[in-house]
Length: 251
Image 1 (cartoon, one colour):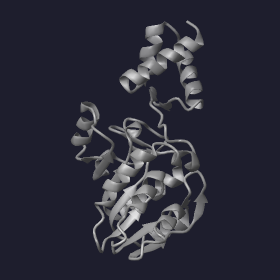
Image 2 (spheres, rainbow, N blue to C red):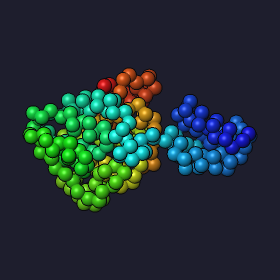
Image 3 (cartoon, one colour):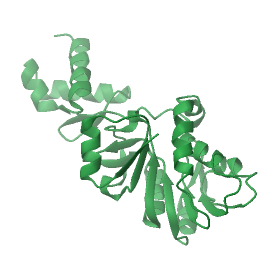
Image 4 (tube, rainbow, N blue to C red):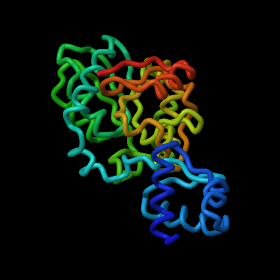
C-alpha cells in the first residue's frame, strides 16, 4: 500500500471512530508500528490530527489566527452569543475570555445591563466601550497575537485577585476523556486560572469543537458548567456531556 493510501485510511478511521490506535492500524495493514508512527507524525505536522500516546485524536479546526476566525461561521457565533448574553445578570462580575464567539457575546449584552466585565482581550474591551452601564476591567500582560489576549505573570496576578460569578471560556477542543483544550501552554494557564476564580464556567462552541483535541489541557470536562452550542446534538456527544454533568443549551 502506498503512503498516501495509508494516510487516507488513517484519516477515514479517525473520522469514523473519533480516534486511531496505532497498533490496530499496523496489524490491519501488515506494516510496522514505526511506519504508522511516521505516518501519524507527518499527518500531525499537516495539522490533520493530534498525536496522543498509542495513536491519534482529531485535531481542532479552530487553529487559524484571530482575523481568519472572525470570518468563519459568523451567523452561528451570533446565535451563540445571543444565548450567552442572556445568562448575564445585573450586578454580576463576569470573566469573558478571548475569542471571536465571545466578541459576539460582548456585543449582544444589553445596553441597560449594569455589570462588571473582566477580560484579558482588547477586542472584548472595545466591543463593550459603548455599553454605558458596564464597567470594563482590562487585564494586561504580554499580547499573545494569535488570539489577541494578554498572557503571562502580570495577567495571572491580576486574575487571581478577582472572584467572578461567571466565566465565559473560549477553547479549541472539548473531549470526553481529554477535557477542554487549547493550542498554547500560557493561554491554557490563564484560562484555567479564570475558571478556578469563577463560580461557574460557560462555553459557547460550534459542533466542530466537540470531540476535537488541542495540545494543552485547560481542565476536565466535569469542570464545565454549561455548554451553549448550535442546533441539535447527536446522541453520542449529548451522552458524554450528560455523563460529565454539563448543562446543555442549544442555540
